[in-house]
Image (cartoon, helix red, strand yellow):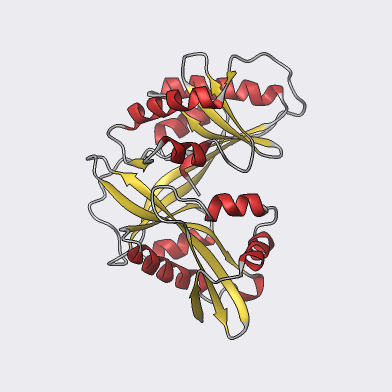
Length: 302
């Protein structure tokens, strides 16, 4: 296999390959948002694998800044939109992509290669075999009602420009003492959370907290949810549940924190296990020490 970094004139083929492997992945707007922005590091890199003239697989590495529990910052790469064409599967492409992604992270002065995977995903097994630390996460889903309930809900829609600073300040306070993704400027945060290809909505909740939702075809995805305690999160999710049910929509919530996932379970969400994986890009092993407590919102992911 030959690996080519950032091939020129390859945008159309790369986008077609992503949609072949992940139907409905997106078009030009999604491609630009994922691969052409800078968020706490260089613009994303892309790599593709070839065998002769045959295209096999590809992946992106998005660069971000992480603030650790002790306040220090480090650059990490996130594996983004990894794909292997159907005819090339079970040939070790993803393991090669892990190796090449570590190389790119090192070239960009990063320390860790990270990824987000569900527990039942085949990529999870390859990342674990490569030596990654596996930090538990949860994907929580509340199915849509049979019909819109039309019932009342407390959550109040806010103007995004006015809400941005309030939400960021709240998140910053709540993230103290936790490892989390950091943003160097307000514009970077807004580009990651608010200015997305799909419509986003900022909500003020009844207890004074905030949520940011992304509108999917049949579901609302919780990008950001504030709340210091399990009780706070349970109340907030109950408000969002009422809002989505009134519109006849499902509600999807991701978190790296067990107390928050338990709050979702208590409200009837189906909890699906996942992992945030971390691999030392230099030693290609489990990073040490690993005493970090991670607070990751769905909007942080790529």
